[in-house]
Picture 1 (cartoon, rainbow over the protein chains, first blue to last red):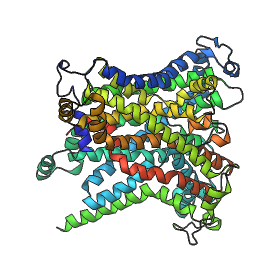
Picture 2 (picture 1 turned 180 degrees about the vertical axis):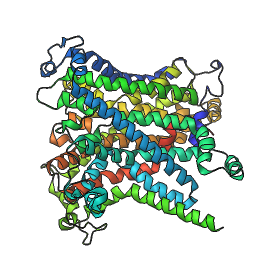
Picture 3 (picture 1 turned 90 degrees about the vertical axis):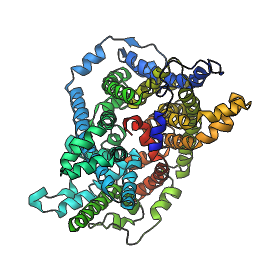
Length: 324
Length: 280
């Protein structure tokens, strides 16, 4: 990993920050031709659809428009409708609260595991990292299906385990408890699932970062009798701060966008548990009366939220990595 | 000395606990897949099957889900993933060469563009893409979907590959050029072989992106015979919610190739996302 990190830093421009070297024999069109296919692909597949959502969010688009009839402009009607709807705000609250909980827990667990991996012996460390990577590599679809089974009502392992615990602690009747019937238990399962899939990325990033901290710093801290807690906050965290800010921002973006797992865990039928992305999707595709315009307005709100956070990510990356 | 040993034991115990918790859901999936029904629904679950059976796998592989054989879904997924790998690999290699080898106007803009479009919530794009593909008559087509997956895999692929291209010493190319090799020859003879490991890593990433994707496939491919493995799993799960044996067998078949590939490339994934942020 370090070799790539160094390689990335060796990118031209970082080392030769002056103007472009003039004496190149290659045609000046070269680089533009090389990025042209990518630009076309990104333009058509990612940027054009974003423009379209923005446009459709001001229109009434339904099944008729699928047959080719022109869409009717309705101005801010779609936005007025969703912003005045308390259900929309419920989905916003779900999105934000879930992201807050999942991001906090993911960073906490990931950092602790990263620190642990760094303390373990070489062989033990790769063994544990192997298990951690299995969690990371599991496709979202299967992860969600496995967690539905773990939290299932008949034969589900979690209910069985909770019933083994004393009743005064956790109550009883867990084996028949339906985890997928209301938002709170739904999002509890979703949070556990998302933390389980996302903490490995943080752990591996923290580990990679720790490997770059000069060991003299830790020796000095030890000689001075610094506690583990102080060492982390005084040495590790400040040095790894850039890495932490990147993974924090990435986690926020990913958790705002969570879709597949919730789609499988609670589904389109369970509208009480919708978040923004599921609400937008279901408005457009969930019923026979397709409301693509209204769905676009909801999707637009999510896109703006995500892009606002992305702006922070881009700033950090540009500053640190020197893409310029 | 004593406290040091105690510390080691405590750390190793914590390590084993982390391993167990991380790997457990996947272990439970595989274990359930090999259990007969009475063990799956037993009132006291056991970690490993007492009487391991291939019945669930047999049901998935030969029984046919919704009247279509597992292999049919498998082939569809494979076609999509392979198409995505080939096209996005080619485009990423060209673009990565441009940003790693040339200084040109808008280079920074291009790199920032890649960072930003990577983060666009795809779930939001499904609506306009559905309408566009409908108008183009590509709604039920694997080609339309492959194009979309290329769009998703490409930005990160370039970001990942540019490090590999930049790592190839430029002197090698210059030397070849002085010896009279044209740019095309330099590309195929010098750059391509040296970047091959990076291309493999990027390809695996694109493969996983396409292999795992559910929402676009689910929304666009409404014909059963076009469906992919994730759709198969979702459908299977939605229809027979409690038939855990076969569902876990199907999940296992979907997951194992991904885990295998993933273990090969995980290092590159991290470096692609946070590289410069980890100060050396």
